[in-house]
Image (cartoon, rainbow, N blue to C red; front, side, top):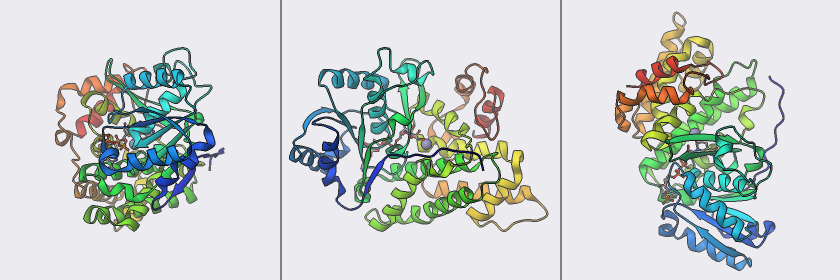
Length: 389
Ligand code: NZQ
Ligand code: ZN
């Protein structure tokens, strides 16, 4: 096990009706709140009214900024920074999914920075101070509700880039599984693919031995697989959603990568798909991850055998590790397809015309590698994208 420091400061308020406590939680951080949200799902569901009432009851002044798009845009982040400075905002409240939360995180670090907030996402600057962020989560997926990451798309050049800092862990996150009842099938599927991918990125590691976190990662994957079908069959199944929502948070709150180094190449490659084609992150991962596995499994075939046997219940073929691994990957693909997701690029509307461009962007013109379990250069990334055709 590698040495590590672990601290996740996000207070989780979990359960039925917990959005009513938003005002109480927010009031701990001041009286002026920026209410940040997406394209309107929270108004349709009635969540907006509940949150506003709760904030007003707690004596909070509200400034609003809606309109966050999936794959959240830099231009709206800049607008949010201007508003926060003008209105002397104390707390940003993100009500929505990963896109709204990530946009709030970008605003929170941009407020105290004299340069352009995009500098954080290009590695030119590191955040020194941030406004606190609270969240009311509406979709179990990205894990941003208790992560130290934010992913923003710069419309100028279609670059989608991540930034990480312990300053952007939300100070509180309200998780009510009932809020997921209104999700469309496609978003349910994308969310499940994303949280599974967060576990896989951590699972494929060169750190050894990592027995406890292997078992925790495998158990969380199995739990997601068990409950994914239940929430798809019955969108009102509270207990199943509670399992999925908490799994999604646990998958990405950094507890499960204690003592180990994850890979993350599949995420980085997927960001090129979302950046250029504006597809949902989870849909892109369902295409990239199986291709990445097929390309890399020989690097540590025993780890892939363990995954196939323990997570997918593949009967181990003792004459051929390769057969065991390929059976595991095939079961993973069947699972993704059972959610209604495509596992090839054409299924998400991408042909072969810009593969080279994506590989080039991802590797910064073949000057850097991506991934830690296996380090990938431009040619490797291109090969993976071709495997996904
Ligand atoms: O915009 P509205 O109208 O609210 O609709 C949203 C949006 O269209 C809708 N939705 C959300 N909750 C709903 C709902 N519709 C009905 N009922 C509800 N309860 O779902 C759509 C997608 O929302 P989005 O926030 O984009 O989804 P998700 O949570 O999957 O977030 C994806 C973003 O998170 C980033 C991704 O790259 C992507 O940009 N990620 C962030 C991470 C982090 N910060 O730690 C890690 C992840 O790996 C990921 O990269
Ligand atoms: Zn993800």
